[in-house]
Image (cartoon, rainbow, N blue to C red):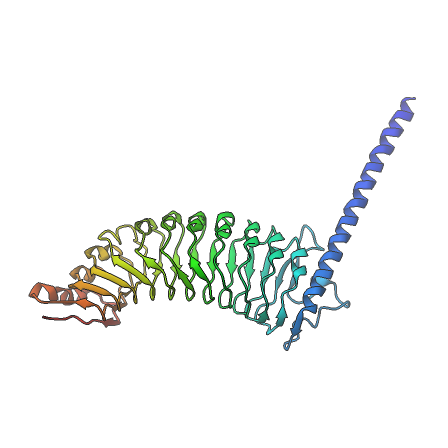
Length: 361
């Protein structure tokens, strides 16, 4: 009786193992077939391939050996990366890309792809990098991309994308480190939810039609190093919270409709700032003496504004200064002390170019 019981338990254990193994194999096979059919669907939507980048995509090779395709180590049949950058591919993006559920990297930059970004890409929960830059994509940025909560790199620059920046993208993709939407046709405001990107290092929203003011939440981005919104229609003043981002290296806000004065303490917390580009706005008042506190500054471009008063002599403390442009303002030098900035600039031994226009009334 005891032997029969042991035999029954052993048989049951082996049966469970057998069923588990069978289901595992079936699941692996199913995933393999899904990824294969998804890649073939992607290929079918490509109408031009002059460099023959997809010539290896046939039955003579396993799909994990096709050009641009990388499969995983833990799941060797599943596609984890599709990289076909700069291959002159033309055509549309297949909806089936969303079925590559193990995909972590999708890089199709610098091709000639047209059409819209499939909203189904939001199903790629493992995706860390999405680069569709330098194509001819149109339509809107799908709000469904906010479901890609593991995204670290989102590059959609130099397309023809329209509409607004989805606030949910910044609410949910909190691991984003690099966000580039430069060179599109985006409009509307910069979402206040920008402040949720607490890991972000670079934000480039330049050359769009964004309006409204800069969100105060930008001060929460303690790892931000590069912030570009050049050539938009952004209004209002620079939020005081910007001065708290000690990690900032480049602050480029030129060619907008920003206004008001630069706060006296603007450089008190920006010890790593190397580029300050505020050209082509509506700033007025004096250039703050505290600009010398941005001790790493190498490039200053304040031209085409309405700054008044004299250029502060403290500018001579900027040992790394390489480029200075303050022309096309209303700067004056009516007293001998107003010309002290010229003497102080002899300390700027790295200065290569200076564009000055100072009036004497």
